[in-house]
Length: 361
Image (cartoon, rainbow, N blue to C red; front, side, top):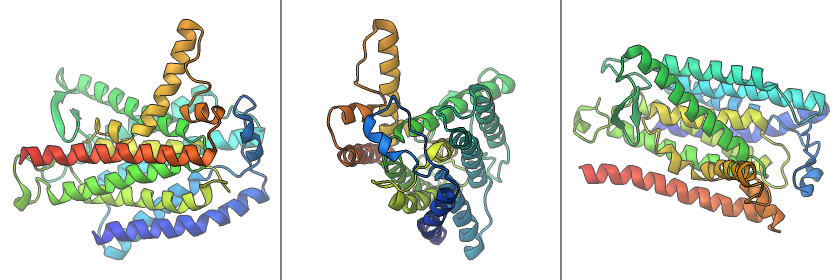
């Protein structure tokens, strides 16, 4: 527990005090956000605001993870390092995308081919590696069995190890891409995605601690309701690192934002959420936990599908937060109300997680 608290505190401090230094660095080089003309006109005042702030979140999380383990003299785990690899790798792809947008002053960053290739390489590498490095209990960070609150009876390796690996890689890729896009689409108003991410990562801190206390690898907790997760306590440390980093960044990202996280942050945070869900064996539970991201992503799917099928739009503009902007809601009002929705979804997810354990004991 001490490692979790130290990780959260270090990442918070690094992010809180490191972000203004990074802002000055970006301003000195005129690395400002490009604003699309087809978005809400109120956003034109944000043109030139420093972006690529997700780099601070990533660096703060990595520094906190290393610092917490050095202070407590606890070695890092494979599960924790894999999630950090996924977060950092996708963050690097997002950083290249942001940098090209800024340097070229256009809405298109990396072209779809190289961007997809980069995301695919990182996601596939994470997926393949997660099925290796079994511990003394023969547990690997990932599992070919689809999980909800724990592994279910649906095993993707039903047709053999090769087919199972292919299906597992495809399944995890869909999870990673879907979560990253959900966070990316939510990152349209000052502080919206950052604040919602804090809540979801906070939920994974609680899940990791609870799984560690009820781990099947602990003799006193062994039983039908114990959790077969390889490194639950260290995954809670990773979640605490990212949660603290987002908290510190939110101080500067809240309205009026002094910096945006950009694709650097949204892709990294989405990847970290998917990685935590995969390694804590709570893959399907990620849907209610990140319900706000799901709603906003669905609004885009509905908007595009409706327009292609009927020629009509369901919303005034997608993603969903821009619909309410055009309806006359203030930006701060939308953000706070969406935070409330995000919090309710997180509470629902944690309630389902705990209820499953109570019913089964």
